[in-house]
Length: 313
Image (tube, rainbow, N blue to C red; front, side, top):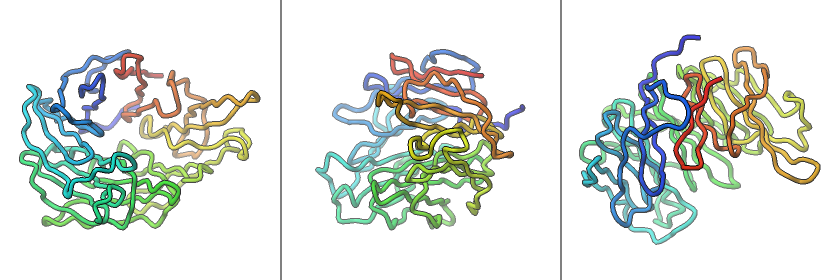
């Protein structure tokens, strides 16, 4: 099946303290070789990271800043999260680079950082690090995962609030303003956006089911529970892992324990238009979360070296 063009082909991994960037536009399979390697500034503990399409620079977050460095190791800019937080655990600031490379989107879990602030969603100019737009959020999250919509310039944000659930927002910058729209759930975890952006996939926070939603409204078009995969729902659960293999096929992760109490996981292919389980996907993943889906029919796991391994059916 022909795939739609994807604007974002660069992924990054943190390997041995360095940020490695890989160009997925290459048809290479097997263990991937970095197209560029970036060295964080001394003393920076990197949390999340994203590289420019031309591989000239990378942005990353630490507990107290977002930083931009060049391929030669020079610091282009640094935007501090103020006031400084000495909390070391329970909050993970995140970053993602817009598809056009002009803006950096930052999720700041300021409540858990002890800053006496609401959580914030901030958009920075990628050239200078200057704030272009920002908004307070009604959350106290530990961390958040941001997803770039492939066609309409929106970014979706899933915020994990631990036992309190998961909150999903979408937003774009209009006339210098960021006005997040909150989806009406506290019990669904955003897993992935479809390659064409027409739908998205969530898993129940209690791990009871996986659902597919129309975008942008979020209406459920299909949902599956453990019994639809031939498993006992009291013993097997949906994991917060998986995504879209291509436009019509998604990958869902199930977890459980065998008779000896050993944990297991399996990845299954789902025909999304039909809402039907197809077959198990032999992913070669090391664990339930060792799976990254670019949406082009391939998937990535992790080599013992830390570099991604690219597979196809």
